[in-house]
Image (cartoon, rainbow, N blue to C red; front, side):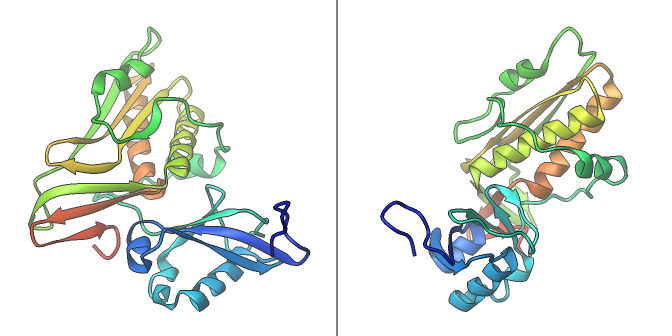
Length: 253
């Protein structure tokens, strides 16, 4: 238990568990507190989750856990006061993930500092020029830009809107990580990313990525690296809304 001073009594570790997207929708709550035994690991929390929330039985094998905004292995010890997020499959994409060099960069890249202003999520509509301006410079021989937009049809159905939900602090930290991977793999290359959250109409921009590099080949490769990594590991979820229902993209879709 927790005393008046906010410290845990001996033998108890308390963690806050946060739920997002399809998991939040299934449980009907956004967060709750779990008290575990001292020395508990992520695997122990999974057991506690199933015991308290049996509705997660079919979901939990497909959900990653993040501890203090970083993906965690099941053997990671939990500290008292930690924030644990259940990360269901993110929005994904139709393109295959990069192999080879990108994979090596992902494993080798250190965790970067907090994200600068142009690696962010926002509810306001996106403009392209500020994102490009954040990376452009006289040393850049090429600036590659990716703009994602809401299309009118998906899976053979007419789309009315997209709803983006995010674990914003972790998502922005992941964007900074991706930018660090780019800097390590393609020296002299700069990245800016702004992603929407909330409800978007058809035709609106969902993400703008700008990459500046001395060489065009590096700019192209780095831009692809960022969008693929974003769709793999950024905790941003997409809900497609149709006239006759809605689905979370990435969860059985």
